Image (cartoon, rainbow, N blue to C red):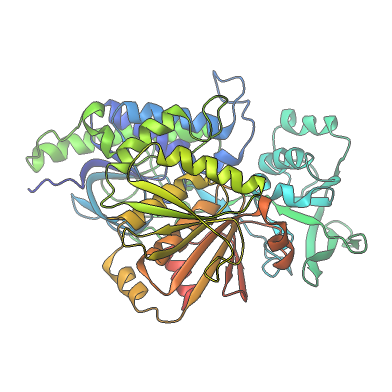
Length: 547
């Protein structure tokens, strides 16, 4: 059979602890391994600030721990690509996966997409998402500085995030449906160290409401059915953070893969599903305990079990060894780059500089960054960043533009990306793209320089049919792990359509936008100054909103 560049021994869908563990084991066994992740490397655990029950690691942040796993997998040869899987053909010996970056084929597939935060369905939940109702303390906690916060849930995530929120909130109240916490006592006992945390048991949230933002909430005691109401201080608001478990991310998975009534994938002791050559690992599986340690165990079992299947198929289909040593394939690896400030290294660390060299080598043309700046300290930061970035490569140049012309963006300062012809791409960054948004900025440069991120033909055609002018503002926090997907989706559409502009705003520098659109959660997207939408969106979801 024909072997091509997009053919792998093993494709792993999801780069949380389960997927990363599977990648380490499969790549170490010298199989060609591809990991597909639609958001960011590390999965849900990256929002956890402290992990203290992972064997051999006394304490680590979720981001730190999974970053070590990614590096380990890459050193064995695993390849990472940020792409969303749209559909799969799984019932033949050679599996085919259709993604936002084209099709890939493999002899075996490991499904490790994890689970998403569960929504409770109380009255007002949908209406006030992003305006007081939130699901990520790391992303949205700062918006509730000095305010009261209710945390819904009594499990590990709720307790831990409640403690984290004390960094910002005036008071944190845990609302627990059960008569006691549902996490380990060693975890809940830590709450005693926080005088501004209160817990109310046997209680559930019935309703939340207000005008533009939350002003009241109604709770009910599950034993005597009595209701009580919380009202925010006059002229103020408050927050509701929902941590009530997770829903398996399986709606997109082919119907041939068996799942239980709750949507979790059914596997045997080898982590194999009912479909030959298709395995599953991590929180997406039917299991009693969902922790990092069980996720990495699932990944290891799935990978070692799949090795036997892949080995048999090599013989059956007469496939040669396609493993590529790490040194030979490293330049192909698409990594989840993150810029960070390092003392003595300016805006971009020496490690990231080395990695960017390979990225810039793929650019088809030069990108110009037109910087609309003034004399503010914020503009000074952008100047420093652009000087540093342009010093790494001749594929990115920048010019400073006076802000007194009619063509100047409404909000300043701004970085506008221009094609080599000098024409605007419609992509703007209002802020120094550090943190999680550095990757978004690099991808934006790549899309403007070409060849850019691949789009399937149907999506590309939908973008070409857009005829009305559309401005999309994406309001973000640089600490938000969910924001980059929305930023990259909007800018990809803008790069492909002359009718769409996409502007990323670091809200820490634009408090007036927070007030104007009543933002209490990120990402927040504003369409033509009218329609406001909260929550991460991919290209397809954004196109549906634009249409």
